Length: 79
Image: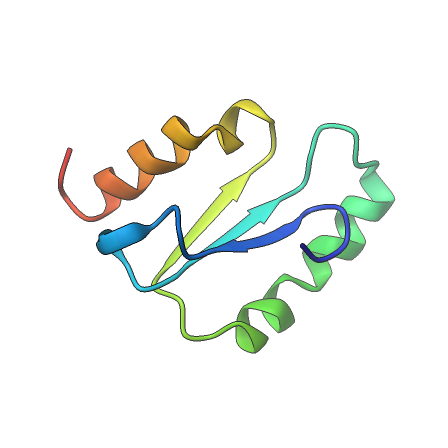
């Protein structure tokens, strides 16, 4: 976990992708903090390579396991 909104997950992606970069800025992150974190996104992606999918979430509902897995399945053409 990096700051209040950065997360990378290998386990959620399972067999569908080697790695999935997840960018999450929760609803409680203010606009200034969100802007600063968004400004670090490219740098963080470079540091955490290789990853094969980029998932962005802005609410807790979008971070639910089912929502993330459904998105990954759609990206790899399973659903």
